[in-house]
Every structure is written in C-alpha cells, then in structure tokens.
Length: 252
Ligand code: CIR
Image (cartoon, rainbow, N blue to C red; front, side, top):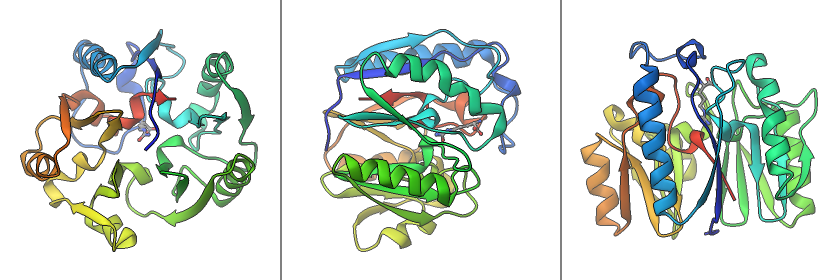
C-alpha cells in the first residue's frame, strides 16, 4: 500500500448545510462540523502527514469534500470534473494547490468524474460508474493512469453515491464493504457490513493507522480482529451531507 506524506483539506463553510444531500439525518451544525473537521486534521497529523488546510470558500457548500476534485498518485495529480454542476469549479483552487507538488492532468468534457468513485488497490484503480462518474470520465482517467504505469477497470455502482461510499481497501488484501459491493469483489478478503452499519464502509487507511468513523461497534470489532491500529473519528455532521472519512482529504 502506498505511503503518504501530505494531505490537503478544506474547512467547511458557514453554508455547509446548503450542500447536496440524500440523507434524512437532519441539518448539520456548522460549529460541530468545524470541530469534527479539526479533529480529523489532528488524526491526519497523528498518521504523520503534513496537512495543508485551505480556507472555506462560500461559493461551494460542498467544498470541504475535496476528495472529489482530484485523483493523486506519486507521479501526477489528475484534476477531476465533478459530476454535479454545483461542484465543477471547486477544482480550480485544488488544481492551484496540487500543482505546487505535482504535474497535473485533467478530466475534460464530456467526461465527468468524482474522486469518491476511485478506489486504489495497490497499482490498480477501480472506477465506480455512478451518477457522478460517466464512462467518458472513466476512460479518460484510465488512459492517463496507463501512461504512468497503473491499470484501471470500471465497476457499476447503483443506489449509493460513490464507489467508496460502500467499500474501502484496507491494505494487505483486505476490504470492508456493504453486501452489494462485497459480491462484486468476491473472493477477496472482505468484511461484509450489517446494513445498519453500512456508513462504516468508508474507512481510510493512512500509513500505520486506519481511520474509522465513531459509533459502529460491530464493524469496529471485525476491524480490530484483523489487527489494525485504529483512530476513531466523529463524523456525524459530515454524514448528514453524505460525506465520509475519505471525502475530506486528498492524500499524496
Ligand atoms: C455531494 O453530494 O457531492 C456531497 N454532499 C458529498 C460528497 C461526498 N464525497 C465523497 O463521498 N467522496
């Protein structure tokens, strides 16, 4: 599994609650979201990362979900073209930041693609085809990745927002997933989640730690059995806006 040294995050803005959501968990509190975001940044630092914190940009209520704006490898940062029109211009600031560290490439129209649909498993990238990522975006990403020595393939994803809403690669050949996606990745070693804990599929492996969302005891027990060092992070406010642990950072 690749090791990371850097993270880029963007703080939630005061109008965070005006972003897109399908959840029925109620309106998030800006103050609590900010607190949870700070705790998330502390967790990243504990994993050994140098964290760049961008200020909120009120033009983009979903702007804290920076994962969707790029796919970053050791060699290149591929700037995405987010699938929801309200998010397309989020990429500009991120592109400026990433170009300080990496060569950049871009997904262009008619392709669209959200970083949340991209799951890296060692040298291979799974690309979820969802309402946010179309085949043109997937094909463009694949041909860029191929140039840098990586492989890619697509996975059809229904009913959930992004591929990584329902599955995470934990390293060492292990995955954690909701049933619907676990079936597609069988016969890998997969923790299959109970439906009431499906939110905890979105875990984040960073160097020696695994970040997991707080409040999912069954999945936590299964993860601990595999011997991971976990850091639990409270995600209640981001969950209300359909966001998870991976969504809040770009790692490289
Ligand atoms: C959206 O619907 O675009 C945001 N409210 C949530 C994005 C979550 N991002 C992710 O899963 N990578």
